[in-house]
Length: 152
Image 1 (cartoon, rainbow, N blue to C red):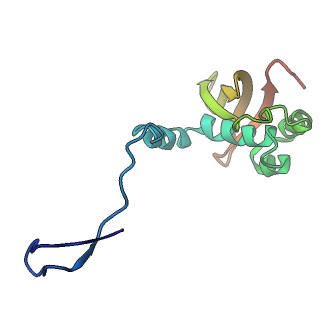
Image 2: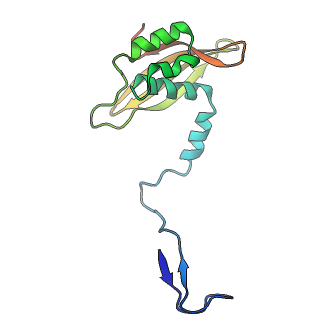
Image 3: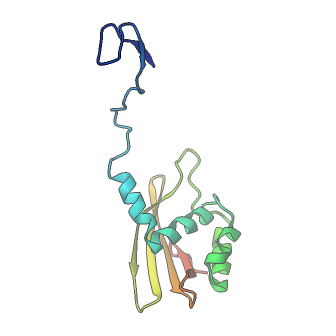
C-alpha cells in the first residue's frame, strides 16, 4: 500500500514523496491466541506429543503407515498397520482434520513411557494409548498402540 506524504515529516523527507506502509493489522477474532505458538513449541519438545501427532497422521490416513516404520518396534508396526486399514481417525466429511487435544504420560520405570492421548475429530473425542521404549541408542520407539478400546 502506498500513501502520499503531503508535508515535511522529518529530516530528508520532502513534501509529495511516496512512502510505503505495511498491511493493515488484523484485529478480528480469527487471530490465533498469542500463547498458541508458545504452547505448540512446548508440545513439540515433548516425546509423547511428538509420537501422538505422528500416530494420528497415520491413523487418519494423512500419512502412510510405513512413514512410522523407523519409529516403531516390529509388533507395534503390525498393530498400527491393522488399526490404520480403515483410517479410523479420518474426520467426518464436512469436518476439520483431527488433532491431539491433550496427551499425558506415566513412566513405570526409566526408559518407558505409557502415554494416552485424546484425539478430537469433529464433535467426538477418541482415546489413543501407546507405549514408548527407549533403546540402547537413546531413541524412543513405539512398542504398542491401542485406539479407543480397539485392541489388536
